[in-house]
Image 1 (tube, helix red, strand yellow):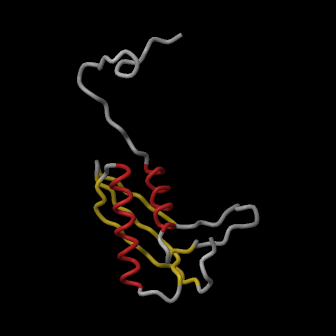
Image 2 (cartoon, helix red, strand yellow):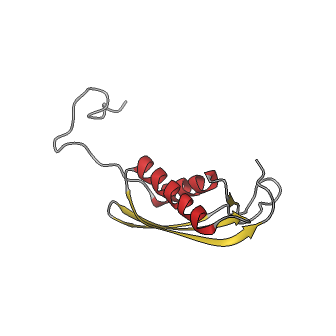
Image 3 (cartoon, rainbow, N blue to C red):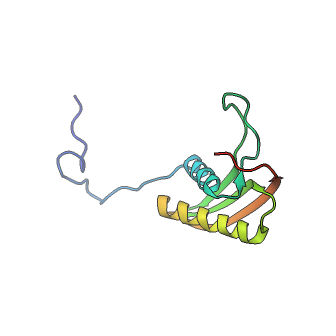
Length: 123
């Protein structure tokens, strides 16, 4: 049986203070993808095959410099919609979600609309 980890079971803390939490880029990508799909105008980029295989819902690129993150997000949007207002609302939602959840600061968020979808949103 292994000894208790300092700071967890016996109440002691290791010298030098607390550690740090590292959020992987992959986690940020998934968070951005999920936040994007919460927006009412965003549609999946590609239709998945039967059984849910394949089909990118949203493409995300994460670049990091210390505690600052830059995001590039490619989405499909419902048509018609006011592009500037819709992209701005999506950007605000993504930034708020990432900063609230990870504690990282979002430096830039580029929204790229790569496709319009005429079909109504399926839920």
